Amino acid sequence: MPNQLGKRYVCTVCDTQVLCTKAGSGSVMCHEKDMEPLQPRPLPSSD
Image (cartoon, rainbow, N blue to C red; front, side):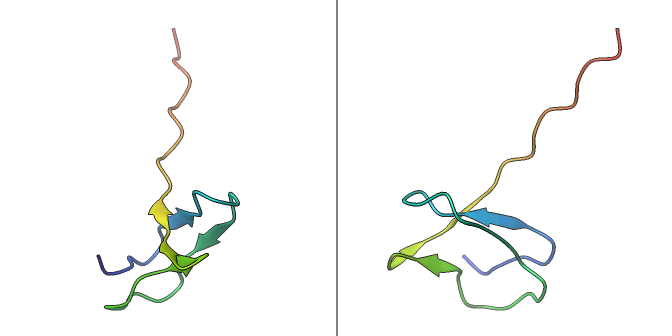
């Protein structure tokens, strides 16, 4: 999967997070494994 500009990626081994500042066809790796895109935090409800 190509890396995407503005996305945060997290390592499943050591919890290192990186922010992609330039899109490309490669992938972000840590500990010889592809890093997973970080899921956005849910916004609090305004009830």
